Image (tube, rainbow, N blue to C red; front, side, top):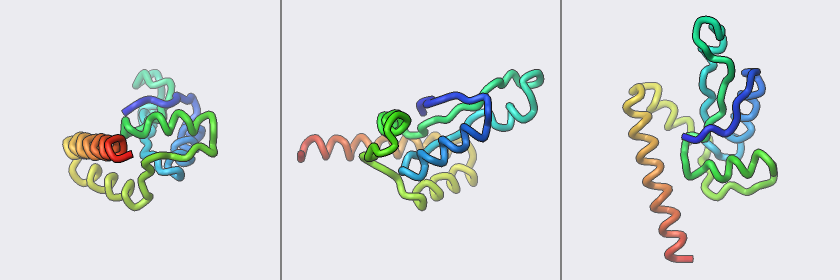
Length: 117
């Protein structure tokens, strides 16, 4: 996971995450609950927007400055929903496994692309 941006306003973070997701970038907004409770109780002053899959970070960063950037390996909404469902049903261990599996698949795709280009 790579932090893309931090916001003091949760709405701004959510809007960016949704914009990236619409382009096929799997995102996560961190510290939402902590920020709602308050900085005094939790220490959270900002919420972060993350690219969950490292291989999508370059595309996510490019989209921040160019909304017309074409994402190389976008996920469909269905793929993202499926990953989220698995994460939510099995907790953190499955999330880590999913990230590792998706990262390995991405590396394999990039390797195949480079070899057969």
